[in-house]
Image 1: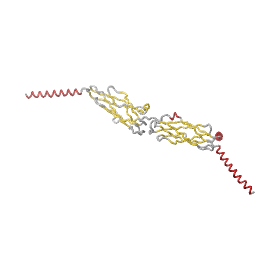
Image 2: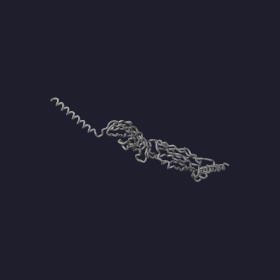
Image 3: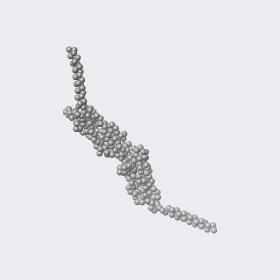
Image 4: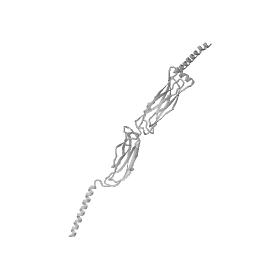
Length: 321
């Protein structure tokens, strides 16, 4: 009897080890890998993203499938009981000047060999610190949670986009926009232009109309830096405007409105322009004008004075006699 137990006990232990090994091997045998195929809408991603005012939505297709020797069998069993796999989406890295969200942040996927596709949207918005034409890169994490025989996995995808040009100016007039002058003098104005945009900007001044006989002088353009650049260019400059009224002979009492268009252009790409700002200046010219006769009048006055002086001398001499 004792001898029988001595034989049976080792056999039972051996059978238990074999059973345990078979169970473990069986569980590992049916394991499947998770795979995600990510497709980004490049047409949407390539659109220049204008800072502050614009939001860029980038559609992304997420296709989930399982692979492995027994993947068709596992997929069939999971579908029979309505089992699903969870995929978590998160933003892993993004530029400091960009605000990024992805929706929905969770996908509930049915495991299949052929793959099932869900749509998500990456939404991007950037602030004024984003320089025009700057490239931005967003790193997205797709994390698949383990579900029984289906292994978990992590997939990373980079999505790139380009910052667009934000044309924005602040215009001020330190000396005002209304002046009175005389025909022989000029009306001088200062136009202070500040670049609030996100690129080196060429600001052009275009005269809309000039009344006959009025002379208007202003620089054709001025280059302004931007606060988003690290080159240290000045973002603000003052432009001098000079308006000279007609000075034909006679009395003048004229009032005119001089109008300009101020338009910002991207310095590196002149095809990119912002809306034009219309500015107006009012000048009133009042007084007498004697153009070209001032020197003659002076000479004539000197001659008359000399004549009067000599005549008085002559009369004084005759009186003494």
